[in-house]
Image (cartoon, rainbow, N blue to C red; front, side):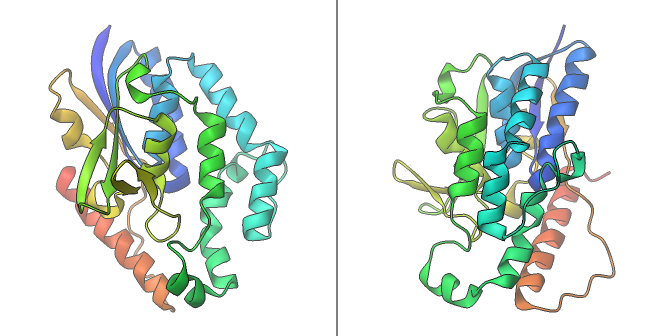
Length: 249
């Protein structure tokens, strides 16, 4: 089998589309010798690194995302229940609804008094229901989780310690979900700094790198109307330009 290092990027809810790419790579005869993931890519990377059969990984993810427990979380946080089970476009709608939630609540007060706009319970519950409570170094497939440490101000690559904690930190959107304590660090999503960890994956030099990007291109013609929409738009533009530096073609 052809050995590869797999780099899985962010992209919000779209990051879970990595599962289909992993399946295609395995069917094509590739052996994944290391996974480097960021944000939702670290969550999928953690699932794959457990060594479970692809069909079991997919079944585990969909079983939880279609469960009553997950639907209750959506209703509690956003006041909206997901669509009925079986509609594929509703699986990850909770991520998209963040913006609706922000508009409907007293954001200004929360921003001034809390470390995040949303409680970390939703992300924590997703991670705990999808990933085993194991150390990263015990995984059958080596995994590197990329995040930002707010204390040191540096990007960090986590390869030891709690799998769940590392993934939660990597997927905690800055300001949206609270940063995750890990030792002396406070971890959060890398945002525009590293939405596709291809260069980090290349640094291992173990095998050719296959980098999977699921983020969308910047859509022209958008006219932000609020301060929050301006910030979101600038972040999208910055991430798009960063990706072009990594993938200039």
